[in-house]
Amino acid sequence: MPDHAHAPDPRANRATDPREVPRRRIEAVLFDFHGTLAQVEDAREWVLAAAASCGATLERMRATVLADRLLTAGRAGGPLPHRVPPRLAEVWSERDLYPHAHRAAYTGLAATVDAGIEGLADALYDRVLSPEGWVPYPDAAPTLAALRAAGVKVAVVSNIGFDLRPLFDAWGLTDLVDAFALSYEVGRCKPDPGIFLRACGMVGVDSEQALMVGDTPADAGAVGAGCAVLVLPPAEVGRPNGLGAVLDLALGG
Image 1 (cartoon, rainbow, N blue to C red):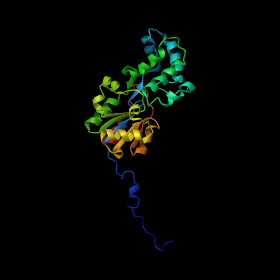
Image 2: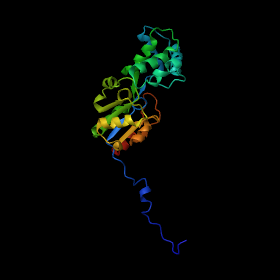
Image 3: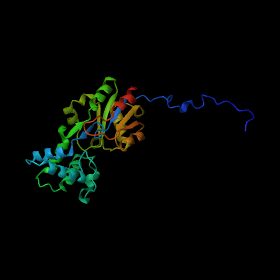
Image 4: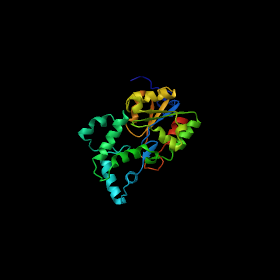
């Protein structure tokens, strides 16, 4: 033990004080799509609309039961299936890399549910391709607009087997997005760092100056690309999704 005790240097632990750790500058925000900017419509409404496009009218109770069975089987934009039939295993594994595999996987899963409506499996899938099949979170547009006004680049990064641009066009949000990094176009799926690096390259920003915002562990894979990450908790359809936290981090609000 030293002969003389010394008072602790108040500067010794200064670097560990979170209030004084320099904040990284955010020049771009990368957003997941499903569960972050938008959510699929209510499952019963999905079934009712798809059935109507096939010329069938369902009672709401029957539509509810059918929706529950289809959710268990697996819905595009919904929960993962409890089981994938062996005959669909290949297209399921490639669903986010090729549009034909995405359609084949989800229409194949829907077809495992006997609804007694001809063409329903394809109608259910087509509904997911339409803007009416989705509900943007109410804080999505204001958040994107605030980032655009502040000069922060925005990219949408999604594991998806179809083009999201028509949806953003219909919602009037396309002008607020600088780039779309879609897995079937990029050839990489989250959490592969490659898709995040591609998104950063699209908007001309180094990954260390990018913030990835999502709702799943796959989105957190952006850490491997050098991005900061914000994982949002689940939010109900039509309710704010907590995207105000993005502005706090990106703009220092």
